[in-house]
Length: 292
Image (cartoon, rainbow, N blue to C red; front, top):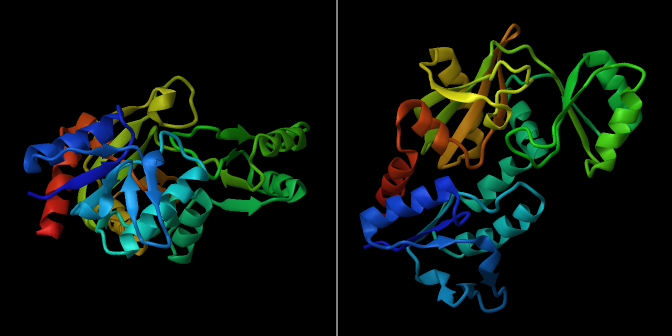
């Protein structure tokens, strides 16, 4: 039987579910918190505590930390070392690195010609203010966040410069602002496994006045049958990154379809709650098939 470990968050819903799915198929269960990984660049040794990671048949990365931060880049680099020395890892750490940071993901999408909301990036608060006045109400986004954490909506006006300075002082030296789009009360999570379309769920806004549809803001997952155009755009958006499992956030706007991001890890809970699809089981089967 294959010995496949999950890098994830102990106690996390998706991490535990994926570890359980692998255990049911292989009889082996290991959920690794990445802060216990150690690599020796001289000898090539890679350990998780006392475990020699080279004895594994593979690793699946579900999460590299409970929250997004630059520290996750360091953890991914350690996993990249292990992967490049021959241990199969899904998705490959080098590919996750390209989407974990919001700016690198955005640059990759725009270079691939993917339509996104108008976006401006700068470290200069004066340029950020000019962009806000030009674009109108905009969402200011941290480079490392999920479920809209740390994001704020700012509008042009007398206090805009002060609010931009406050956003930058909160640790956002690079200012990333994106025009606030009018959504039809929902956006879509379009999920891919091994580069192939799997399913789509909707995140429906709570109706409590929140500007975003995230579950943190009261949004609910719902089943959704997307148009061919939505699937085609999402397929094109995820293709350059080559992730084994990913979810593309797509919005249907007055100006046409727009992509917000390609996720490094997301999609498990949305598929389960919206459609009863067990993404953990499907992912486990996919990895076992790749390792066969």
